[in-house]
Image (cartoon, rainbow, N blue to C red; front, side):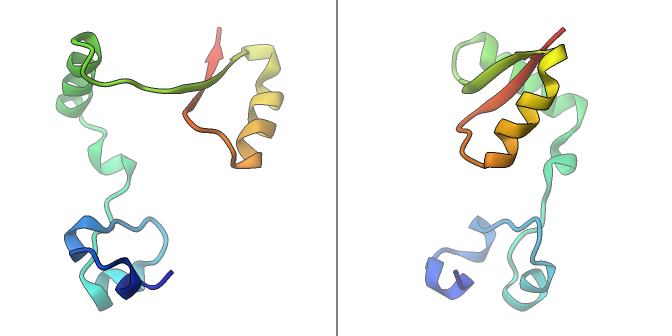
Length: 86
């Protein structure tokens, strides 16, 4: 899908793969590592504790079943996080 087809302001579009679009259209290129600060994690934990943020869990796997978890991930049909239980 072309950026022009989205009809959104460039600051509402974030890419993790198409870095030419950052230069060409002025979209963002912020990945997960950009938000991995102690302050962000603390804020997210607080939101979860207050019940204001729900993290959907698509599946829970025992650590011995890590291969099955990766198979599920490769299908690209998960809606939520996959959790490995120790």
